[in-house]
View (tube, helix red, strand yellow):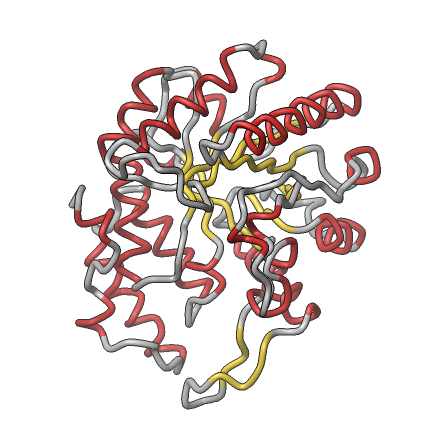
Length: 329
């Protein structure tokens, strides 16, 4: 049993404790934006020199798995294959997972405008070919209040579930916020997303359901509504933009407070000055060992010890800048 399985078992049994909060590193941007989002290599003065190479990206994944703080390493099938073949996960409690689809709303490559159109479903990985390396994947759906686009997305989601059943594959479900204007009142939109999500799962048997969910944090009211509606759903939040360090830790604290049990962060880890220290502080906050503002100070102390130049001075990095986080502070 992996650490992920043990934590999910306790959560479902009603025995959740803060140390059971699940943290995933989302190292899958090569499935969407590609090269420019895999991270930056910086000089001693903090200036950006270039984008990371695939080899450097893989090295960071190795370091994070070996740190043994996250519960899930989410990456592209090609990168999970490399790490699996070299035996990285053989004696690790970290669960490997793949991004199982890459719909057009994450096609935000340089110069592209694909993401300005209502999401269309697309999937590269073959679950049967991935199965020797992992049996867990992330599937994403985006509801845009567009009947044709949403029907197409749900039809492909159904096809994916059938392939999961045929191959013995498990999945967790990501629901992005709409990537185009829906015409829905912004105050109602988070509840529209909740409704779409729950409606899409209502017709599924337990065996067909996702292990857990990943969606944007749209404020305490919407998150509490979703978590309270169906406690059998293990709800997780995605990280969104890079933001300040305080934004990262505040998001974890608020999400956990209002019922989320999982955080799946990509840019907040990948673009951190000191990713391993950032992950450790995420764990300290989710376990209630540090408050978000305390974690920022400790994070800066760790950077100073390592000789890493912070992107922001401490006071600025300890500010909440994301509007949704100011709603639940």
